[in-house]
Amino acid sequence: MASPITTSREADELATAAATAGHVMAGMPPTGADLAAARRVARGQSTAEQEADRMYAEIVARRTR
Image (tube, rainbow, N blue to C red; front, side, top):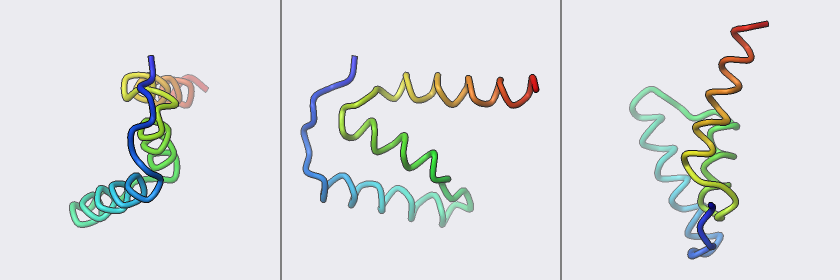
């Protein structure tokens, strides 16, 4: 179950920007889908586990085409 919203939109965007910067510096920039998933979790619309399951299902679907 997703958790309730506990932060402001500005705090969510700041956290997303910081995580993005770290990933870019590490040579692994996030995709648009990655950022959308992070925002859904931050807003309480899904859990990290649900997002991981969704991404895994997308990978499997692409490989089985």
